Amino acid sequence: MPRSRSLVRAAVAAVAAGLMLPLLAAPSTAGAAITTEPGSMTVGTYNIRAGVSTDTFRHAVEALTTRVQVAGLQEVNSHAKEDVLASLPGWSYYRSPRGLGEQTPVIWNSSVFTFLSARAARISGEGYIGDELPTGDGYLDPNYVTVVHLRHIATGQAISVVNLHTAHGAVYGGLPVPSRPRLFKRYAHEIVRIGEIASTEKAWGPTYVLGDFNVGWVQDNKHRHAKLPFRVMRAIGMRSMWATERPASGGTHSTSLIDQVYSTTRATHARVEFDMSDSDHHPGTADYVVPPVS
Image 1 (tube, rainbow, N blue to C red):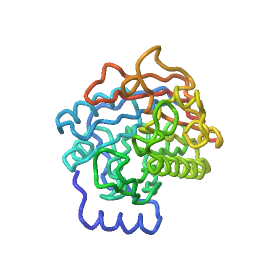
Image 2 (cartoon, rainbow, N blue to C red):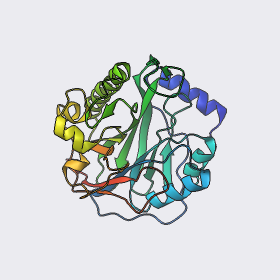
Image 3 (cartoon, helix red, strand yellow):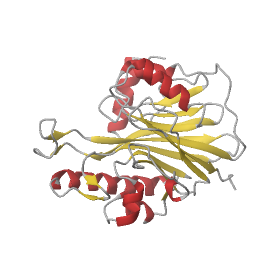
Image 4 (cartoon, one colour):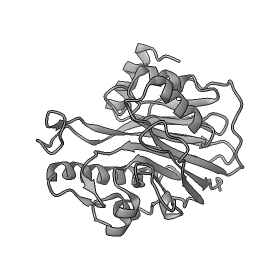
């Protein structure tokens, strides 16, 4: 379902003002609903590489919707791919306006959740890194996270979903890359901002911070660097899905578990969807119990 120009302009103005945004695409009511046990849900994160075709993207997203009820996507880089999200039967989505984190949309099953509000939140501004990365002009664009508020229909519980894709190349093996101090400074700033946003969102309800963190959980857990996700998120009472369980070998990207869900409630199960291989990443999915409204 295409968005009108007036809605896009209104959305940009609302983001600039720091307001929560209305949903820009109406929920589809077609198709069979995915069933889930009352009070439970499966959350996913999937980096579908920007270079894949729209058809491959469609195949990847459609497969993901059979395994989750809500998910964050990364590297969604075209209007054609957004059209795929708008056409999913029984699903809704929020994608920020261009320049405000549009590559990190959130999707959800419309029979499991109702939409409340959404916004884009900046985690870093334009930054100079010189020749620390082999491509580009030495500058990185501002980076944003997507924040979506939903209500879990079965329990009445409001939840917050924060979808992100952090700067890549700053960390290797759970430690800063010594030859990239500017890039690591930016990365560390992004992690601090994510922690600040998550801390605020916790007042809303159960919070799920997910996406491509560009640091493997095993390595981060081993070194526990003060400026990396493990320590920052633990300080605000959030833990990764991979603290519950992880595969005996392999990861969401190569051998690393860089795609994660951090949450205020402990995952009951966590898995890498190894049979889904439309990208250079595999999805990570985790099961959670949704606390009822007291």
